Image (tube, rainbow, N blue to C red):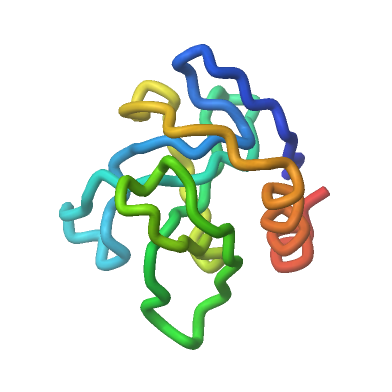
Length: 120
């Protein structure tokens, strides 16, 4: 998997951006919710790879990367990226762009993803 940092405030999701999209619950029972995700890669088929954000750590056994606070959270809460669950999402499923994550923070997330999954 090849990651890139290519945010472009054009209304389309790009690697390096935090966007809102529907994320199914891990139980895969048809339920889920609209939540922010960090887009980390674009696939040749036109889909994107993303990791979900949360404002609280849910499970100590999971791997989290802190990314601070930003405009993706109206309450200004600190956020974490969940590395244990990489989502494949379609660009048309994105509801809105929130912002571009700063490059050093994006690079930290991607370095951990590369280490964990062997990506280039």
